[in-house]
Length: 445
Image 1 (cartoon, rainbow, N blue to C red):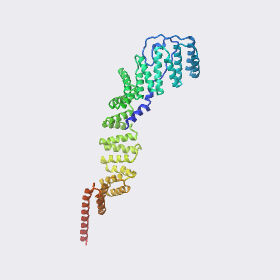
Image 2: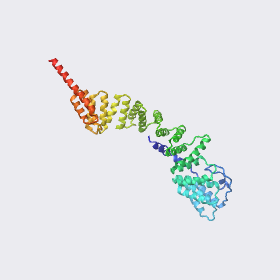
Image 3: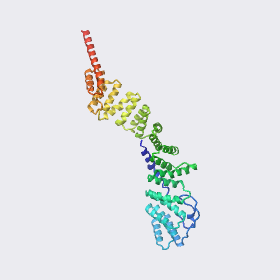
Image 4: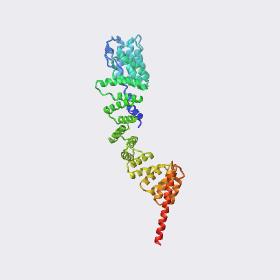
């Protein structure tokens, strides 16, 4: 199986990456609360020292309140117009400008005008002497917005600035930073904050978030650290038991050359009805063959073909025939090999089919298959085919044709010795038969 495909599917198609853009909710602070900014950063949850919030004029407060009411009523264009009108007022203080741009940013974000929202947050942060909570909240939200527009370098730079101002970051913040480094393909750097997030969660006895484990896992994968990746996968299948994680674990065991473990996992999934794709079942069948369980492989392949999950192509039919043969089910090995031979454009499979007939003492059928093989051509060892043909013809008492086949085989030095031995034996039997027939004829007369 392709371990890379399994990882990409489980990480990206499941939306794990986007889910890490944690609910971007810009702080929308009512100016009626004088010390609101000084109390707590919603992004980090830490308590900060109280810092006196600059005052706001009654006129500006009234205008912001009007804009807020319009925006909360989803009259966004009117709300933006009210904010734009306020922006034209002269002599706004730095604090009032920061509040104004914060309202702009929130509205643009709600309208998914992310570039405008980013520009507004940049203007908030450009104001001097910002209250600490407004600064940290703006930085955190700005970082998330850069994630949304996929400017990961900028997002990482900003979230690191946020960390410098924050005393007690949450695991979500570490996850965000880890995600940023991952997107920049800096996998070692990504693991550092992700491991911190993991440690914080487990230290308080909580189960790590699925997305956190997924990110750690994919970092280990990109670093080729399959042993540590396996440890994360074991947690995933315990806390979030899904077939895709078991499949990825099976692929990881394959990378570690622990094929017995890989087979055990795939067998468990198959028996639970969770291994539905043909290529997955083929993988298990090949592992059965590798671990000398051909009967299991044959039963699986036969069922998969009957259900239409495993394609009945030349390669798969050959594998099924080989599985039955190794399971000492010679008769059952014939139908898939016959079907594969019919599909094949060269004579190699017809030659293989002839060998199967010889093993079952069906010499006339073997002769027919070998004739077909020579007619199709493309044989890698035509000398061996002639040896087989000579043998089958000999067993059907067609001595002259057998001698011709062994004579042709003797032209190849690789089969010369065996062919000459057979020629001596066939000629001897031919003469013996003649003598026997002559003796019987004399007795009758």
